[in-house]
Amino acid sequence: MKTPIRVAVAGARGKMGAFTIGALKATADVEYVGGLVRGSPASADEYSDVRTLAEKTQAAVIVDFSVFPASKTIAIEAMANGVRPVVGASGYSAADVQALRDAVTRTGIGCVFAPNFAVGAVLMMKFSVEAARHFEAVEIVEMHESGKKDAPSGTAMATARAIGAIRSFERAPTNSMIAEGARGADVGGVGIHSLRMPGVVTNQEVRFGGEGEQLTISHVSSSRSSFMQGVLLAVRAANGLTRFVDGLGELL
Image 1: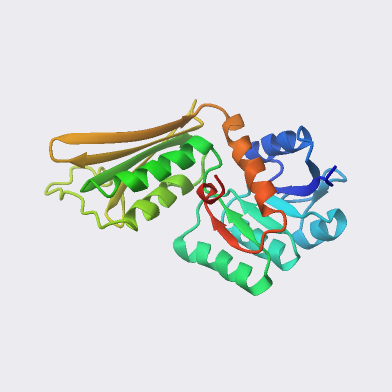
Image 2 (image 1 turned 180 degrees about the vertical axis):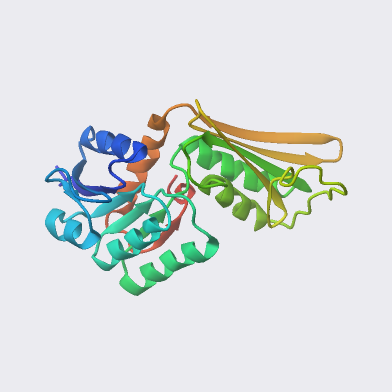
């Protein structure tokens, strides 16, 4: 029998962190070894800095559900200490993602960057990339719980970057803007509209428009359990990884 993968969690006290810890403890081929937290550790398996966590736990992988920009620092410090990060935090710009790539090149330690761990969401992005070849206009509508700190979501930004790499999009102009922000954000010609409401986990629609037709590709996560299959897939792939993986789609 193989030795279980030693896995730590950054943002261990958050909702996603706590859910992930539960999933790791319930999985036979991985072992939860400690959590990275802000402030003073409250138990023997909590740590306040990456270096100490790496030394004390001998973690092979750290799953990061902290918040940006701390997430970027954690990931880079983890690689510097020989721990492979699986980054699930949002808020990253293209330049921030490049900084992770540079750290992989510098250290030889791999990293999985995954804006969304739900397999259905990854397939939504994949299908959207294919659809982008055939439509001239696109808008993204994403909805998250009201407590989410950033907007747009990491999934929406990743989707916009992926479909924007296929072709150029131009949004129809608005001559009279009655309320500022009514058209949402513009990311390379891709419109993004962020809704924050109670009673929601995640929901994203990618709406394409063409001559006489529309295509909507959507995904809904009604429980955080939908992310755990992807988290475990990423953890297993990260163990021993020496390259940068941009999105869960590379691992499916």
